[in-house]
Structure formats: C-alpha cells, structure tokens
Image (cartoon, rainbow, N blue to C red; front, side, top):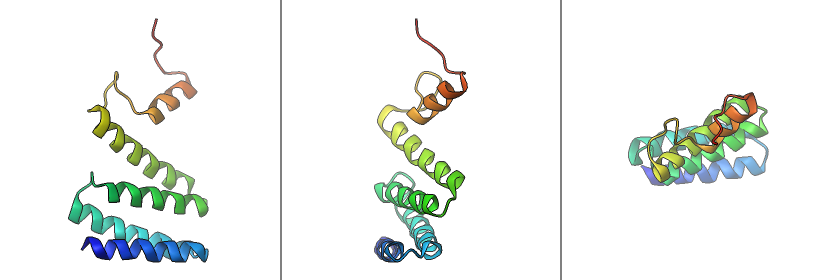
Length: 108
C-alpha cells in the first residue's frame, strides 16, 4: 500500500541522518517497488523516490547507479512534458552527453 511506502521513505530519511546508507538503500528500494506496482511508473512518488535513492547512491560512491536513476527521472519528466523522445526531442542529459563527446548536431 502507498502508505507503507511513505513510511519506508520516512525510515530511510531517519537512517540517512544517522549515516546508515545500506538501510537507506533498502528502504528506498522497497518504497520504490510499492509505488511502482500500486501507482504506476509515472506517479510523482516514483520520481521522488528514485531521486532520493540516487542521492543515497551518491553518498555511497555508487556513481553509475545514481546516474542511471537520475537519467530515468529526467527522461520520464521530459517525456511527460514534451512527448516521445526522438532525434528532434531529446532530454537535456542526452544533449549534454552528445555535446561532451562531440556527436551532437548543430543548427545553422
């Protein structure tokens, strides 16, 4: 139930304040599972929990895991706001990566 997920998020915050990041990760993972199964992947609570979990990964030095979640959140938000992603409609993280490696297209 989503109320259980909310309490798991609260427990994660409490553990985070104590520096218990392994527990934080478990609580956020479980909350995320509940939110996704009960509310669907587009619910704002899913995005918030993914963001919180990504922050937890950063604190643990799990940079690749954090990057994956942050990109998921940004991509989902982009799709909701601007529609399907294609060559003319890319999320900002993708544009930044392309520019960084020199594969981006230039106008004019």
